Length: 95
Image 1 (cartoon, rainbow, N blue to C red):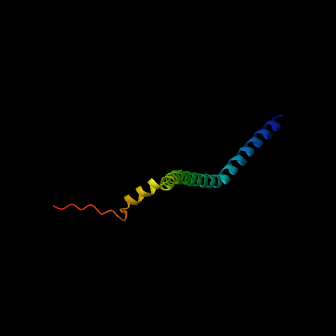
Image 2: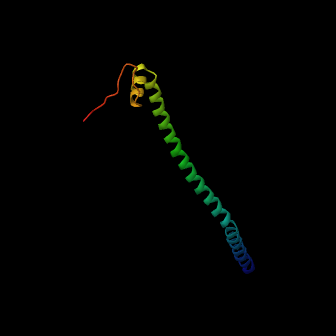
Image 3: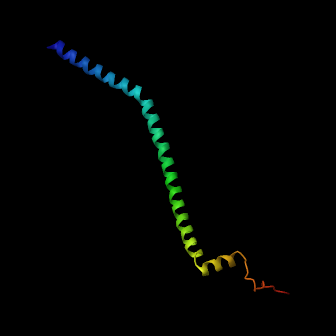
């Protein structure tokens, strides 16, 4: 009975040694996988922010396009760019 108990203790010690060796062996791989996950997470966040920015820009451009599709919108855009009608004269202020 004493030898069975001793064998059981050594079996447990051997198993714990195997666990410790496997942990030491797998730790660098685990750290590498975690580092890749962290890097990918940062890239995904950056791409998500860029996607949201592009969606806002798209909505703004659609609004501008809808505005520019009307005659009043076309005239407003032309005047913002400094264009005049053929019968208009630019405003000149003399001192």
